[in-house]
Image 1 (cartoon, rainbow, N blue to C red):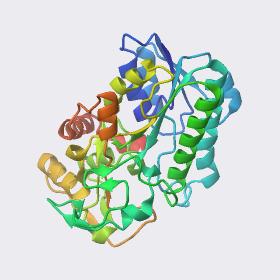
Image 2: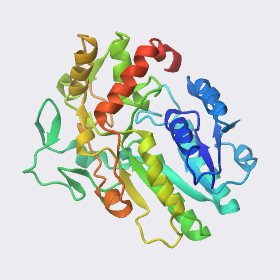
Image 3: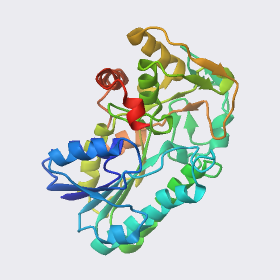
Length: 355
């Protein structure tokens, strides 16, 4: 199969491209990227060395998408991934919608025209904030975990957030663009008879991730610690107890392969959570402790500042994915963190290059 990856020079896109081009079922990989992020050019060179065609273009521009040659599958890795995008005064809300929704529409038209499959990498931030923010938390091993004796909203348990938990607003502007993209993708696929799979991913993490907290808090924290940059715990009393699960993008490759081979009429669920699960969950304080063991002490500022859309705990339950696709992650969190730190050691100015 010939694959088209959007956002191919981003962290997730480039990591997937390098893994997919080595797969026996993949006959070729081509990608498109607008190079809007610092660091993207570094990935372009690496991909070209592997024989991967990288096209400079913007999926928001219909003409750029129309110029792309036919591929069998589109893997959509392009997005502005920040939950604060469009509301932080640094980015435009309209631009966010154009990046994450209008671009998806152009890609779906491409799939309609070429009868190509569509694989959307979505996010845990599609889930409603209110129920998550109101959860009662206990502190266990320096991390927030939900109190097991509370009355949970439907779709949330101590093992994480399930696919049937509500996606009603508020979810953030970013989350809303991804929910809308999911709905449109499913509708296009059903109406125009092409396969669609939606993978709601936990926090992606690994070596080479760009140095910005919105694009991966695990990598940003380790690089900042290594470079002795200012760090702070924001919200929740400045404790650092807030936590997330994490996932290496290369662990998506077996799942993408199975989805690409699945017949259009497959009864498997079209929307699934994909995450590292409970074993991958880490709080910021636990991450700091890991960094201290590797690099020694570095002060982290405590602040009472509260930001919109922050939640104390997010853990995706990937049980449906494991049951439906016989999939589970193979890269443990310790390996991911060590991989990031090893990369940081050999790229001591990565934050200035990629932030």
